[in-house]
Amino acid sequence: MFIDYAKIYVRAGKGGNGAVAFRREKYVPKGGPAGGDGGDGGNVIFIADKNISTLLDVRYKRKYIAKNGEPGGTSLKDGKKGEDIYIKVPVGTVIKDADTEKILCDLDVDGKTFIAARGGKGGRGNSKFATPTNQAPRYAEPGEEGEEKNLILELKLIADVGLVGFPNVGKSTLISAISEAKPKIADYPFTTLEPNLGIVRYKDYNSFIVADIPGIIEGAHKGKGLGLKFLRHIERTKILLIMIDITSEDYKKDYSILSNELEQYSKILSKKKRVIGFSKADLVDESVIKKLKKEKFLDNLPIVIFSAVSGYGIQELLDVLWKQLQD
Image (cartoon, rainbow, N blue to C red; front, side, top):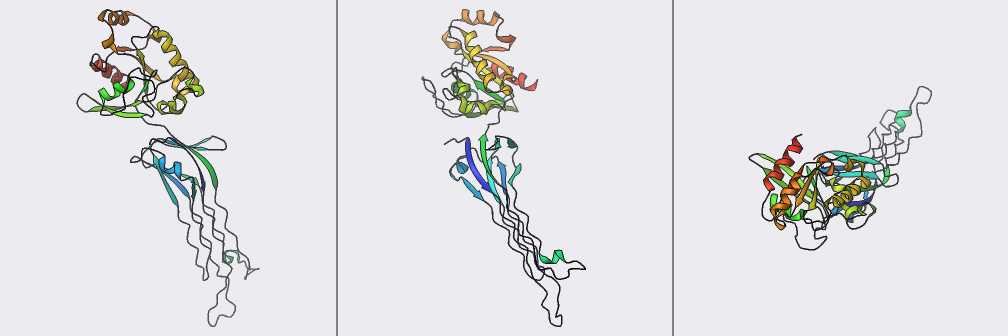
């Protein structure tokens, strides 16, 4: 099951209390203060792990509470620090404050860590409060409370090329043709119900990653269809391949709708470099393809006509995508 959203509660450990104690050694009837400091509370730490691909684990465990620090002891012994909690999440996870929706961290690199909630500082023992005028203080500091937060975790896939198009335009067929990814393919809308990633081998030693998301319909940025749920996954891509069915009665209108949905959803997406790909070229005559190649339209963007079924134009498409990625 692909889970790309979770809301959880985290609380760091409380710092241990400082101790009030005095030396009790033989022949030292009035020993000085000897209370140790309390240990710091444990932290709640996120770590990006490339071996994890979903937020499934944190989706079903909603609370993470770190250990408290131990109180200070006698003979100047400090309390033990509370144990930290490490939460592993997929690379590409964005952590937000659930109350303000402010982005706290973007775990976009394997091994990157983020302390989401810091443990409270341990209280100082009475030995720390001794002065020339107060040589036997009988008080110590209490430990501080640890931080607590409600967090939103959002997974945004990291890919080079994002496939964008209406349902049934052939995105899944294309990614299965150019990579080892094997998404479900069928002749009805919304066959793709979750994002797919495919690694495309280009020529001898090069490669790039393509992300296929469920089809976009008009109003997707408002939550219609599956668009709102998955548009976040192409925010990280370097370029967008806008796919249009070559048999469409009005491809300019199709492009306009898709472009508007991207811009309404995110300013980031509106500025992405784009390539126009006309799919299903095997369904039209050569005359249609020749006419289409001569036209200047769609913001003068690079245009490639291809068929993932027959293989027509696939190498040209890969060449164009690779060139755009290098530029």
